[in-house]
Length: 167
Image 1 (cartoon, rainbow, N blue to C red):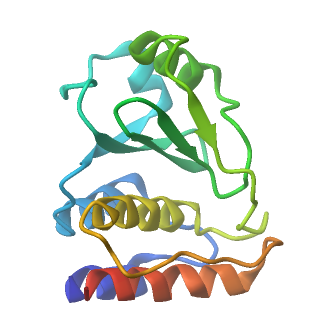
Image 2: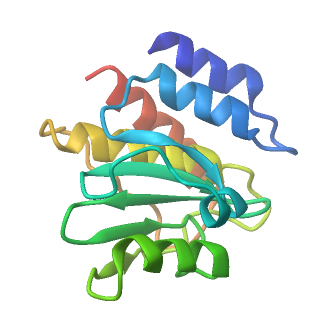
């Protein structure tokens, strides 16, 4: 886990953010039980995913120059976007509808925690994936962010990841 934290410090560029390969590598390095992979929105629409959609899972989706996180709770979906918006990408919306139908409720976070000039969206997804994975093990960490998007939230993201990885 320490190697993953060091990887974040070394490879995340404040200007460019994080790449798909690095984000997926860090998530896999955390050995998250529910993590099934990082997918491009176009891949989800055109290719078969090789995991069971009926079981609980977490995936990270690249929707252009932004990452979002989807978590299947079994009877509902959580769609987590650090900008606090619902699913806007038609390819992702089609994927969710195709695999889960209209009867599966989708819950969206409404609180924007990331500023428009921040490059932390991938790290927020990684934090959510880590938190949701640990949550099933009764984690003691509670995620609390400021009510408005801020750079402080970026620092909190890193602190929460460190706390969760050392639990």
